[in-house]
Length: 517
Image (cartoon, rainbow, N blue to C red):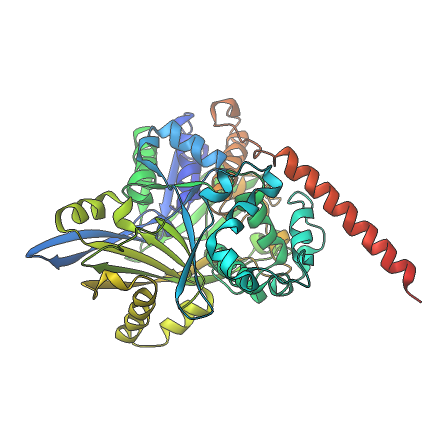
């Protein structure tokens, strides 16, 4: 085999590993380089933390944070099945929303099972969570009596992820502000959890897409699973192992510094390692599986001319806190959910599903809580000393679950700003998989996909499309590669509700125009 016949994949995160693995298993020669000394990208597993309790020391692996495998991750779940690791997924039965009641005490609204098990049609299923005592006792927090059907609800129901219209031109702040008080907080928290930023920083089209696909398209849309040992151990490492077993080559510590483009397209790339050694790697196809900051560093020469017309999202960071306590909550809350009050946005009781923590819990009776902080919450906690940040989180936990007792141990992890921020005029203008240079393709969770998708699913879809592009460049058959499938369509009742909402919106706009002087 000539070295020019190989594919070079740049980036060892989820998208890069999926692309490289799919090509190698189809018999294509692939070499993957990663700038860091480790694989996984945002799914990387860092070093462990040691917790001392009841006379014993226990090591717990540290990851970027819990990753959900949503019900509609069609492509990701196909890959998980092909790798044979589906047994490592565990179903999350319930999701909660912790909020502050009028008197200041914590309230908990179940927002998962109550919708999925509702006997009502999909379009009306969210009503299931509004029948709880929490809502009936404090209707003013959940409803505006003067506006039971806000414009925001109609906008959400009528939104078509396949045709976003002008929703990418504006931010999501007005949409969020139109909801009743508690739903405003819920929408803000969901926006932060999805995009790590405040509603005024996020494209309305991006937020509506996330809510439709992973919220209301079907009763099962908000259903998700988590990995027993973490996403690195249960998905990233199996991907890397399968890639190597198929003949792939991995070189960590090598950073791509530039591309060589000839008259026939891509000819290879330049790379340098941490010791300063430089190499030219000849290849007929190159796949760039980089986050926005990484691709920006490469944007010079021919690449700049082809990518300059597209938007490059900014990167945002996050904070993941892991807190150990001597006792779990007396009334076990949902395994995971959103925090509608305080300095955190999402919570995960790790001792309920994480194998390493669950084993510790069974031996000691202790509990472990993972809190995710995004947007302004992450920024505020990053500006204070670590002890003060931990105290702020302790105060929040003491308010929500006072029975857990004083904290045994705590760990704060400030993740780097690599999560893409889909701001206004950005979400619909990200670069596609192919940008016009023969032999070059892009993939990642921020690269434009042909069908609506986000997060890890978008990374998987664009990775497989990049693999097809590279295979075609080498005249390799693409039928050996995994199929790229369309997402499941919304339920019939939701599609009907969407059509009626769009019709109602159009009629209201026409009547408004008619009465204008």
